[in-house]
Length: 426
Image 1 (tube, rainbow, N blue to C red):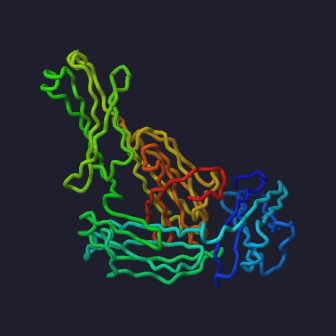
Image 2 (cartoon, rainbow, N blue to C red):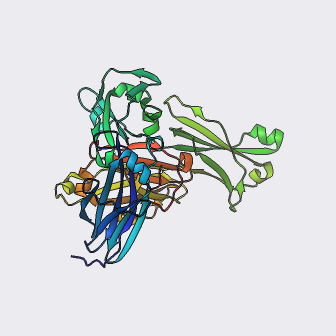
Image 3 (spheres, rainbow, N blue to C red):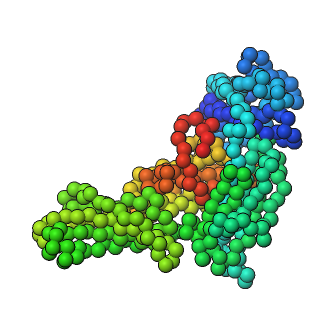
């Protein structure tokens, strides 16, 4: 067995504005991660430095060993009026390797929107005799939501085939429910867009949005008429089979490395429901006639895939490995972050490999990040999210999530400001 050196804990806040059973309670928490040895005490004080000692107000959960280090958590729960009057609260982690203190406040329900994750249908299900599958929308809320779950098909509400479970109380006062709807292979292949909506929050999915189709890039030589009449050569680079042209970048280059001003045309809808666009640059006819070489480069956003742990690994009931694959992107500069239920996870919990070319002749790259958690952590009602940053992604950031309940990933484009704080929202 490997030897691990003693290490002080990292301490992060956990916030939930709802209770476990009623809506009259105030709840916050904290989690200590990555410490060794397993000798940690978590205590709470309020804004006046008074200790919160009531046994019914503080619950500290047993520590868990993961990848050679321990993790522990504590929850503070008070009557709503008392909690608001005494906040902010301070969670103190006392450990032989050092003491950490973190401030935790509960902003209330107005700053705690619902979290929706929409899981696309499984292609394997379509192979069955009925040629249908299921869309899963999982909703998490800090309080028991009053809004119902609505499904829309191409923007039109529908109810046939919808099955929504009752809300279930989770940890730290959160609530969770699953809503499912059947989808046929014909509807999915036709490009139907499905929407899951609760209140103002919504998520969309369709075959085009989830498509892993291979882009087709074609360099079109200039027309003789342009060269003869205008004495210029128009270089056209056509990119086809794209589910979206958001973030598309097309650039023409000279052989000497000089970048040419390139204009990208508006998107054009193809017969297969995907899009194409063109990048056009203009050079002097003399440069073209002299036989100079011009190259078209298209910057591409990554296709992102998240894979749950293998059944063989889970059967050992020790660790669970979640893999996030990014492929088909260019330039190779990319980053990964992992989140658990929306909260950033410690970097030692995952390993990211450097990008490599997809093939010897390919202009695109592939890489992956591997997250390791305990089997117990995977078995709980946790959602693990792989967040990927790349300059060609819409809003430069995208994410895919997976959990035990679905076993299938869901994709959502997000806009955020990355910070070093584990309490960052997204």
